[in-house]
Image 1 (cartoon, rainbow over the protein chains, first blue to last red):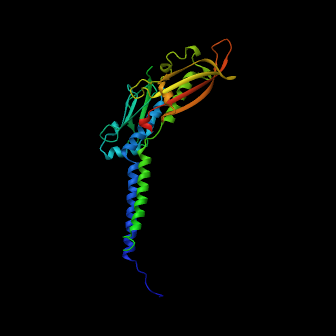
Image 2 (image 1 turned 90 degrees about the vertical axis):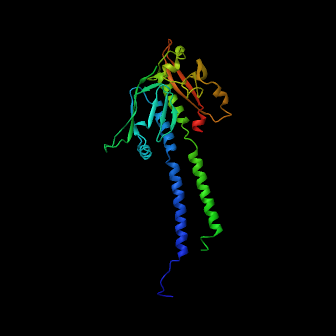
Image 3 (image 1 turned 30 degrees about the vertical axis):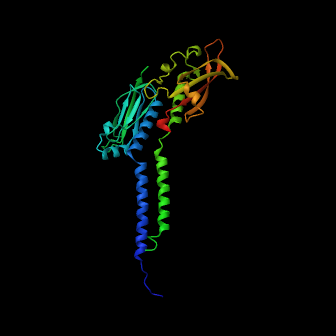
Length: 138
Length: 155
């Protein structure tokens, strides 16, 4: 037996390839579910609403939203329209594609300046959103 | 070819895949429940409003009048209507259980009745404050109860 060269059986190769394929499909499924537009829209709408609830008059908030911007770019959606705040209805809406997006309300009775995307990293690409609490309504 | 076409192997693959898919769908299918953070933010806002440097910011007798407006809280918007309940009670610090002033509530009182039966979120906190309104300063414990519905968006 000494000196005999090893052989790779074709069925073993196919078996391993099929297993890897199965694993890859599973990972892709999990990735697509965890980083989907709907999840990000909900996450950021709630996060922004909570930030507004905890903020005081005159505060300026800069929130990093790079992952959301990447999704918006993929969907050819303007970054300026990603976050909309309705101060009359106390409602934050985040959209990363055409459609209604996700809305969540805040109880803090404040007025906000129009939010807009800004570049904090100085890489000539907007990576964050800027919010400014201009004052209390009452 | 025996391995590839093995029925048992495919059965195992299907069970594993089914399990992972079910877990992912259950985990990501549920909305993020942020009501605890929301309740904390609300209670902080109320505490900041009532107490300034550890002292009552308003006379206790006048606190209830325009309370929400004074504290910049809005429960009247379309999405907040009937979703919140906030109750405040005032106790003597040296004799817990003895009320020093009549408590009051804001928001939807029906939520308090529904608390046990449904999946509403409730949280209670209290803080110490000095009332210098009367002849002698009085130490008060303010108890806050917050109940939030918003079931459709959080549970």
